Image (cartoon, rainbow, N blue to C red; front, side):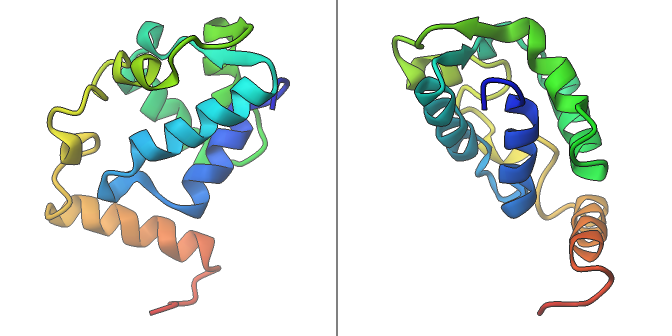
Length: 128
């Protein structure tokens, strides 16, 4: 975790995509894992658009260090004093418009992107 926090976040996102508003929950789990590894991410200093772009690259090419490279400048040694406040301070993740991180989940374009990612994960098989 301390060496590859972006890769860990990528695996969490891969296992459960953020499209249904679970981004903060996944960030909380990630923050706890980071705390246990003796680090924290300064989410308040990150940029939502750049973070989501790096996360998307990580999802498309897992293990290539895309999200690790983005998060590297925001890694802090030691523990976050209040994990929840740190996540709330992240731009765009303050709880307002929780369903619009990537767009409205009812948006057909967003649904198509989700289905494309799901197909990639399933090797082209439909798991419905």
